[in-house]
Length: 507
Ligand code: BEZ
Ligand code: MG
Image (cartoon, rainbow, N blue to C red):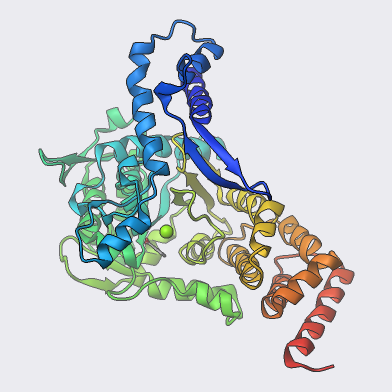
């Protein structure tokens, strides 16, 4: 591990040595020039860096291919082919095709300006994705056990997104299979149609039950992978193993008995929207404040997201709300991946829209809220954090980070809108998962409302979005998500009146 860390550091030093940044008058990076690795006129920088890290015996010839590859990656990063390709396309000329996806996972997606295609949907999860998935699965289980007296989770509720599985070549898909102790087996062309049960002795732990909710985009792109997942879970349910070591079977047997259905039907775990429909629409309700109680939001989720995939009857996605609810009742962990730095939990409203944490808490009926975890696989060193930790991290790096909000405000009108949108998305996490600490709203109020100069700036730049910030803070208090002083609330009410008058041209 230390060796990997040191090499990582050495790479950073070496890459920094290869790149010259020019900054503009405001200190922003305006130009990046790559210096040629091999023309620096001194010992290769990576060798120097490795020596400094204490690896004095590193053989330059052995390490050279790695750094040549990194040089290739760097060339890809700084190549600028957008306009060139656009002009070619407008001239009706040939535009080179290439894969889309996450440049960190696959540097071949760069340079941009290609005629991008996604991937062969039959090829996921790839074996690299399975390896990455194993790390996350191990960390997820370890974290849950550490917080639960060593007990294994019995059921994990997963959110699967299409774009994520394009970027990661199916990592989250593989996580689901591995939790249930099923291995995808590629054929000679890398297509994944075959599955095999990992023997319990090899797995070394119980098979964990999984319930999967696929986004509409995932359903549209990866219907064959839904088939694969359904087969994987049913395969686990049908394995004649002791129920203490097979939670899929344990729950499916009980559900079959309770509901008077057979084991395969009871092992239905792969859900999505109705064909042609997308999202739970909880995000729309939250954005427009068109809801009274949280149970309304939960009902929307259960109504819209309870269409079951069935590999025994492919092509049909029937609403199966009772099966969906029965499976959700056993959930003790909810889980989703964040796979690239492009978007995070409060950047868009779709993350909280697809989160079932409070849905499960309500269905369980035993007063327990499931643990909620998020895997951060944006770097090679995947981290599993609680949802609340991730919301905190997101807030500290964006909403409450002066670098972020000053950057936004430099865009004027739109910047204030971005700020208000982010606050609404944060409120969404209170509504669907109870994952927002009080201090987050308190500090938001201190930064953007209590500070007179700041609030006047927001008001002048974009009165409508400023009103949304004020009304959202009043709303989070009104819904019981934020405890604060009477004087804070009083100020917010006065500001609401003031901005309302201003927008309507009164006074
Ligand atoms: C998806 O890739 O599955 C997705 C994209 C946007 C919103 C929600 C889901
Ligand atoms: Mg995107």
